[in-house]
Length: 205
Ligand SMILES: Nc1ncnc2c1ncn2[C@@H]1O[C@H](COP(=O)(O)OP(=O)(O)OP(=O)(O)O)[C@@H](O)[C@H]1O
Image (tube, rainbow, N blue to C red; front, side, top):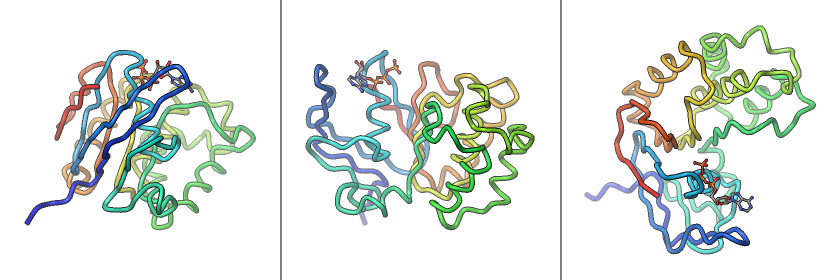
């Protein structure tokens, strides 16, 4: 019996006004980690945003476990999380409020697991701070805590190790390499350096 890919991108076309980036682009990913490589400007972040539903394809289809991103956008997005390291989109919220928002957006998340991730990243003392007062590295750690705790099928992580301190890099590497995680999750990550993780595939743009 043929196994269906977790993520299936078919005939994807997307361009910014001045940049045709993807023309009839195909990609199929199974569970495990895929390293997305490419020079600056190749379109790595754009592809993560397309797969995460933050950008809409101009043509073609993207499906996660058979759920089409355009036909079933809510069901699709419940199954994926995009960790982009961007600045906060709701800057008036505290860290705790951002986390609570995600807990309600993603039913089935174990709050104790999220707490454990926050503890491992030394963020528990920041919960009552406005999210804008986090340092860049702390903000990344907050997003990564969510990435590790949310029960999603597809994890999209832009440059996971950029800006992290040495302990956090080691911790993240251990968590991403856990065999139970690799068996159930499809993780697509970008990195200019070898991520030193157990990879299922490498995709060069
Ligand atoms: N909002 C936008 N409007 C217009 N062009 C954009 C926009 N965002 C990105 N681009 C362009 O699209 C191209 C791909 O950008 P993208 O951020 O996806 O590249 P990348 O491979 O992630 O690069 P890097 O390795 O530098 O992070 C670049 O040429 C960039 O200038």
